Amino acid sequence: MSWGTELWDQFDNLEKHTQWGIDVLEKYIKFVKERTEIELSYAKQLRNLSKKYQPKKNSKEEEEYRYTSTRAFLATLNEMNDYAGQHEVISENMTSLITAELTRYVQELKQERKSHFHDGRKAQQHIETCWKQLEASKRRFERDCKEADRAQQYFEKMDADINVTKADVEKARQQAQLRHQMAEDSKAEYSSTLQKFNSEQHEHYYTHIPNIFQKIQEMEERRIVRIGESMKTFAEVDRQVIPIIGKCLDEITKAAESVDHKNDSQMVIEAFKSGFEPPGDVDFEDFTQPMKRTVSESSLSNSRGDGKSEPKFSSKSKGKLWPFIKKNKGAGPEDFSNLPPEQRRKKLQQKVDELNRDIQKEMDSRDALTKMKDVYIKNPQMGDAASVDHRLAELGQNIEKLRLEVQKFEGWLAEVEGRLPARTEQPRRQSGVYEAQNPSGVNSCAQDRESSPDGSYTEEQSQETEMKVPATDFDDEFDDEEPLPTIGTCKALYTFEGQNEGTISVAEGEMLYVIEEDKGDGWTRIRRNEDEEGYVPTSYVEVYLDKNAKDVHKPLQKISE
Image (spheres, rainbow, N blue to C red):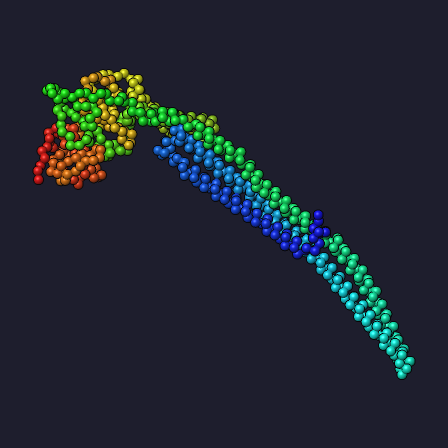
């Protein structure tokens, strides 16, 4: 099967076919190039997607990734980043192994094709020239033969005419002989040219053209083989990354299998456990006997006093003021006493660990400076040993300060964990906003607690219990906590219905005590009686500041319009 023998007369069609083959190759190159661009775009989108859902550093979102489910999600994001990297590898390998190689090969193929068809055209031009020479020789032979025939006929005519002189006859005879000789010469030339043409033609169709077409056939077959190899490489490039992609998917599966619902549930307990005991049973209140009435511990109000039940304007109490208390925003107490015992213990432990890490860091710096000083002492030309003394002294002071801090926090931690000696005392009367200063309050059943968004909590206590609870010396500072003093009075200009926690309902014209001025947020803190206080919009009241305001326990009368 050879193009030279089978397609000896299809020069033009072969030229078109080989050009079509080059066009197909260039089309395939363009296809692979677009595939690499898609892979790069896909990898970029995957990386952006992974980055978008990565937790922000030093944020609350980062803390959420301590649960197994969120850690599995984070592992999935990391594996997707590696997954994207494999698509970048696909793009790079296809570019280097297919696109670049085929582009270079196409240029070589075009040059080779141009050379082969140039030789083919040259051979065609040569055979066409030989054919023209043969035609010219044939026409010349034909013409000379006709001229010789006419000259012979003229001679015979002259020879038969008796009126013609012998000289004319001889002249005609010589002319006929000359024409006959010219015809013989043309015949010989034509014969020679014909033989030469046949030889050239045979050489053309059986040697030159087959050789040229054979080279073109080989060139085309190499192109076909090359594009097939490129397609195989196309698949191999994908196949090479399958094991790594499989590992990524295996890691995602492994991360998914590591999700532990029991562990996450336990972590929720550790994160939010307050350490308090649930409230006890509600006592029966017998109103049939003149005795000290006991208000339910689970009451939403904060009743105080000598057994009297006071009317409540709303279910809002002092223990629910946290949405509006600006002074509790920002950093809380240094000992985290605003947190429930269990959360306080965790915070204190974290603080101790953090301080220990800082101490270790300072000690490492001091050791490094000490070694540097020794080097300076042994080799004065390298530096002045005295230049590091000041820094060493600073590090020593820092370490001592940090150690004192550690001792302080470890003391608080021991207090929370019950390692320090505890004393028993009568529980104190507490204010509406419970600051969590008594970590041993877990034994009290007369508490109703509520958590605030910043992790602190509030507590309501309707009446003192008669049982004794253990307490620490730390409570001494707060045993005599008194309600906020009044700084003036105010008159309600409009009726205000306190619907949110921390607010208090007032009636138009009502006189109340002011215990905290507007801090710039548009709210004023007021008190109606010993147990009812809250915030009202500053624009709803007319404030009369007076240092000698009335006693906090003395009620004010409503002023009618």
